Image (tube, rainbow, N blue to C red; front, side):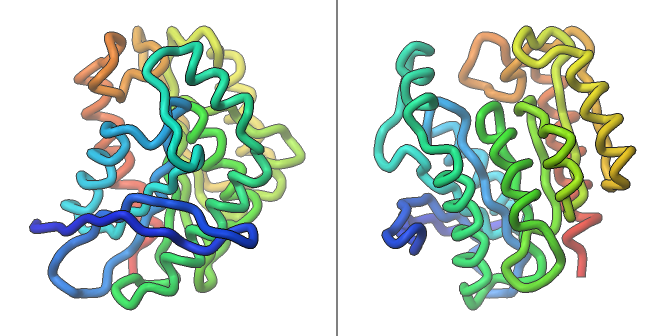
Length: 233
């Protein structure tokens, strides 16, 4: 599918947030996705993923939660992530959903969120704060190896959740993943949680040494299936 891309600024928190927008070029109505960065920032990899979603028929918006900053080394990324106001970032994601709903080409009742690493945890928090089925609400969420929500936040989820995690992730253990799955089940949240045997944190990122092609390909198909199911007409 032919796509078009551009940089935009959308209103949020009394100001604006820069973002990268990728969308089908056919002028038709499409579901939309908010694509949330890893702790590196809005780097070319995230823009590439947004373009991949656009080719699959989604209007994909990747907010720049660092507002122009990005990192290449882990120490830099850690500093940027620690300096980020998490509540403000979640509010920016909610504003991104409202912005997408305002676009003529977006179906405003078919908006999802997907994130990786830091962005995975933010996608869950945004789904808790802004989940639902109304116009501008987040109707489905996908979390790639992001920090699971606490029980009290799981109770606030009103969007189906797909969790994709790595067995060899030293930051988010198998026990953490299983506990999260139990919480989703307890609170009646529609969900699927998949743990990739032998995979490491960031296995989806094809610019990193830990990239695992088979796990990444499977996770991509699961993600597309999830959004096709829950953002359907």
